[in-house]
Amino acid sequence: MQEDRQDIEALCHRLGQAHHDKDAGAIVDCYAADAVVYSLAPPLKDKIDPEGMAEWLATWEGPVLVDAEDVDLVVGPEIAWSTALNRIRGTKKNGTKEDIWFRTTMCFRKVEGEWKIAHDHSSTPYYMDGSLKAAVDLKPEPSAA
Image 1 (cartoon, rainbow, N blue to C red):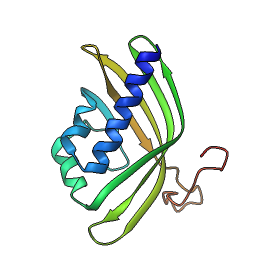
Image 2 (cartoon, one colour):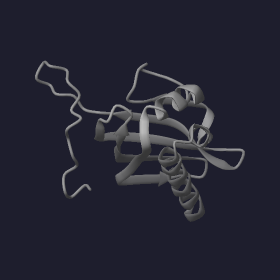
Image 3 (cartoon, rainbow, N blue to C red):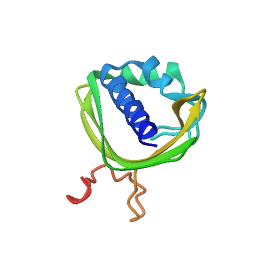
């Protein structure tokens, strides 16, 4: 199981590096072909989309930094899952600096002996005050980061 854990951690590192490098193909390669994605952007449910990923990456000036904190990874023989608090940072082409924390649950599956992301669910909480505004200003508690 330790080797599987290391392989999944390496997969997640490659995913972060691919975001940094703005390499849509490398991001897509981290996912199973039939992966289900619940991302922060519409629609509610999607598949990994190489063209859409490339278009989104093109909206950033410079690297896209994605960090994970408070990671909990559970590894089984063929399936694994993780929960984490993720942070995405960078500068958009319009000059806006982004720094947003969000929640992520990922499920991993071995595909032909290689770990791939089979399910990726990211979300932000929203304020329950009737405004329905996403709570993108939240930061993890010091004990969680």
